[in-house]
Image (cartoon, rainbow, N blue to C red):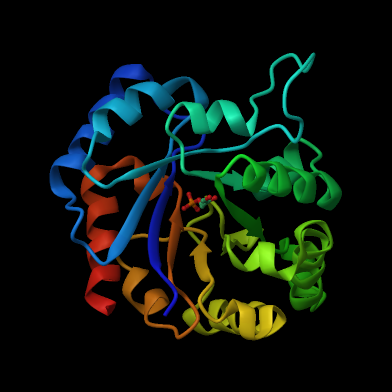
Length: 249
Ligand code: 13P
């Protein structure tokens, strides 16, 4: 069985005080005995406060991005080792906002993925198509290509030890969600691409997940949890979504 995960991507929101208070509230309501794992991805500069606030609650912490290089003259960048040093266990790799707004190529994403694993982090590889690509019926091809680039870098075995998040770009921050059937179609194709090695790989859905649509998405056979943006900034909503995943167990 793939491990179930509920992850919150806080993107570039909040300040030191709000990050600590959100993390504290989650930690207070989360118990390590849950069959589901919770991860939060705060901005880099709030990682320390958040790590301290979650303490031993079982809530895991991750970075939203990383540099593909180990160390050196890379002004403004953060390495995988630096994230691990701050207590991160996970890191988002290739989020569509990184790809679309900051020019990350499939090649750079593959290098970042490799660097994360070399430092002992679990990468959460984000893949997904734009609205135009969906309208042109290229969804499965685009997602398969994004995944293949990583397989070329770390082999199928490496990819299958990670987490993959399918996030259709048109559903991110728009309030528009992929229907459970649309999401399952892509998740099923990803699972097929991974083959036998990927039977236990955790596949997340992301894109306007909220307390109202989570249960139907999580009920799909190849959806093992969610990567939540906006709704993860409110502890009540995020915990509610997490509870819906626990109830699917
Ligand atoms: P929203 O849940 O705000 O659509 O964001 C999804 C996302 O990008 C998570 O990484």
